[in-house]
Length: 73
Image (tube, rainbow, N blue to C red; front, side, top):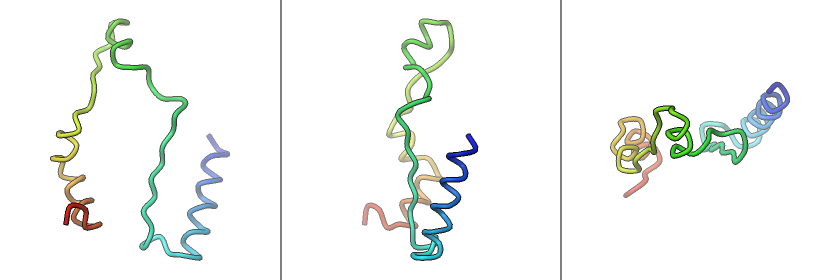
């Protein structure tokens, strides 16, 4: 975990120096190391499920994000 942390720290420093973090939207994603599919987790006896897109859109932090970046205008 230290190598990705260092790499991200260096990336953020570079962006801040050359562009400015206040002018930058950073989105991180991964396709490895995530949890198993909810259906498999349920099969294994672990309470799980999917996140509803409608639930996310109505979530107050998402609304704040939309307002800040003018999404939907």
